[in-house]
Length: 154
Image 1 (tube, one colour):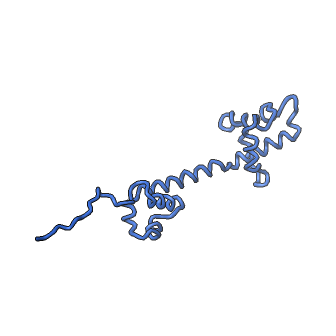
Image 2 (cartoon, helix red, strand yellow; image 1 turned 30 degrees about the vertical axis):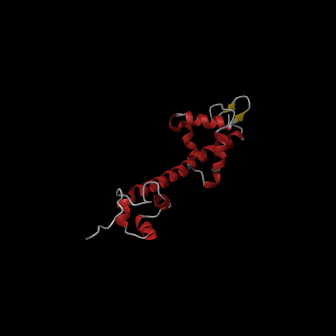
Image 3 (tube, helix red, strand yellow; image 1 turned 180 degrees about the vertical axis):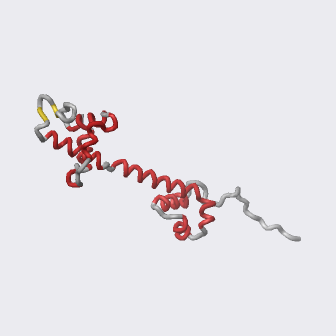
């Protein structure tokens, strides 16, 4: 009489490797850190093709997280033209072009740096504020924190 060996049947997924598991989170973190699939495969031990086949969603999610993080960092950084505009506005308020009664004669009669920034943004495509960015060196530009300080004044 031969006995059948009792086997454990599963539903096709390995235990502990379902979505949201720790390996998925680790793969997402590695992909978000900028590692390519070859490097990830070496770190977890395995083949790059198996990694792609089983965990492509986790790798793509990690890459997307890195792209979003980079876009957010670039959005915070100011362009040279914005820094130049702020520097010119600040200098104009300290010059003879500003009169307390008439306002800033260069920037539409505005009475504060925040108003002048808003006035420049309202102009069509930069309008009269385009000339500000020409011929300035890095030393002539405003610091990044300056624009944040003045952009949201009321």
